[in-house]
Amino acid sequence: QAENSLGLPAGASIEAKRVDLIFRPFQALSGETRLSELVIVQGKVRVHSESSRFAGTQTTPLGWEQIFNLPMDGISLLQTQVEFSSVSPAVNVSFLAESFAIRLRRTRASGPAYEVSAHLRQLSSTVTHDAIQSLKCEAHISMAGFEVAESELEMAGLKLFGTGGLKGDLLGAKALPFDGNLRFEAKPAELMPTLKKLELAEQVQKWLRPQGVLSGDISFSGDARKAAAGLKAKSRVLGQDLGIREWEIAKLSWEGAWDAEKRLLLNERAVF
Image (cartoon, rainbow, N blue to C red; front, side, top):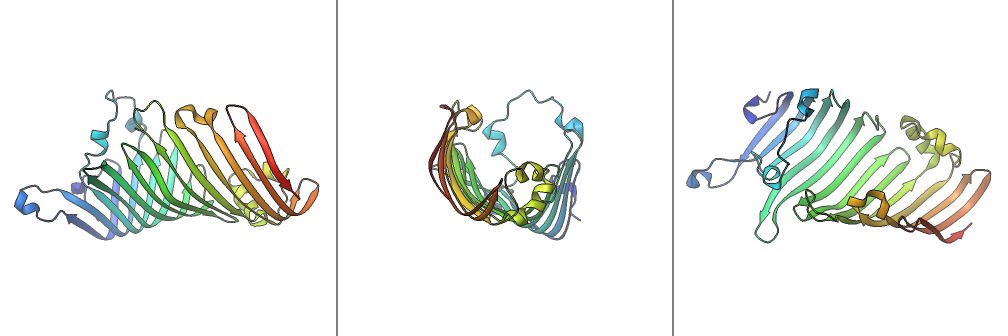
């Protein structure tokens, strides 16, 4: 049982088969004692927040000095169950962290940055229920922006692979240009039970029958400050043995583009 001497917030607890505390080398020589990394192995982490935690009492805007000035440089979870809940808003999230690490890196060239690496399974939440089987991600966040080097999300009947990034100061830039690529593989027959959990099956079944296979990729760009208003995207969709509305489609190849500013959807090429 890990005690609150680790600096855990109120409403948080840790149980673990092993907890490793890693300190910086040569700290005894400098006279500074700082926890470098906390490693939790085969444990359970619970975090619960009451509505008072979200009351509007903070008047000072959050700054990078606060984000990068934490009591440790990293935390790692190995084969650890994580459970988070809050009263207001009503949120429940849980997952098994096969591996999870967030580490602070400081360089003279680019300044401080957080590197995140995660492999999560058995994800469940108020919104997605237990639809997500696995999530893998490698990401990087700094004062210069946010980058997802690679990510993979898996549900029954659906796999998503994504990369992308956002440039600019996330806390204050007037413009936050982003770009990315999303690739997917889907089997409608296996996907329908997942869509039922997400309460989307009824809408999808109006135009797509549970048969065949789909795959494709989408490249996109825009400005996060403009939300969807400045979104541009190009996509390619391939399909085989599909049932779309009343049609049976043995082979599908479709390419298109979307420009939100021009409100224009272009069907560049479609082959049936």
